[in-house]
Length: 169
Image (cartoon, rainbow, N blue to C red):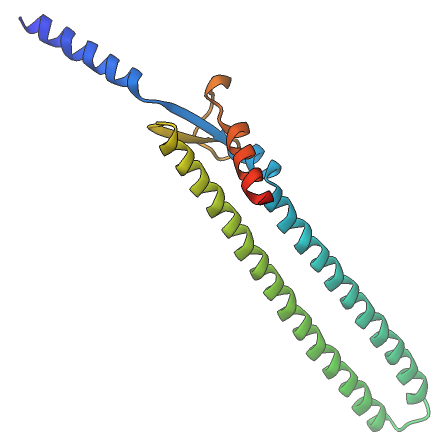
């Protein structure tokens, strides 16, 4: 009697395990192929390059101004030369701080947009799972929880197509 009960429990456990529909998504492949993520990265890369050009331009202008001031300072008293160079240094520090704040703001904006992209992908994965009867959809790729998965259970391509199709709209 006890053996039959144990076998029944094992069989029921086996059957219930087989009823769970499980798939996985390779997060890295998904995000690398997601056009919205690519566009966000591209936009902020262009902004970062513009910021670097601005920084370089300001740096060159200060370099030229410093050289011109050094030449003029040769005919000035030491006190006046120190005052003028000190004022230039203060302006340089102030602009450096402004540029640093702008860079931090740009990074913050980029992170906010990227977080939004990730939330969109997660919502789409959840919707896909519900619509297709999945009990679990696991994460794969770097830092994911799937160390191995049968290709037939890899939902990355399907979900990536859905994400990109919705993004195009």
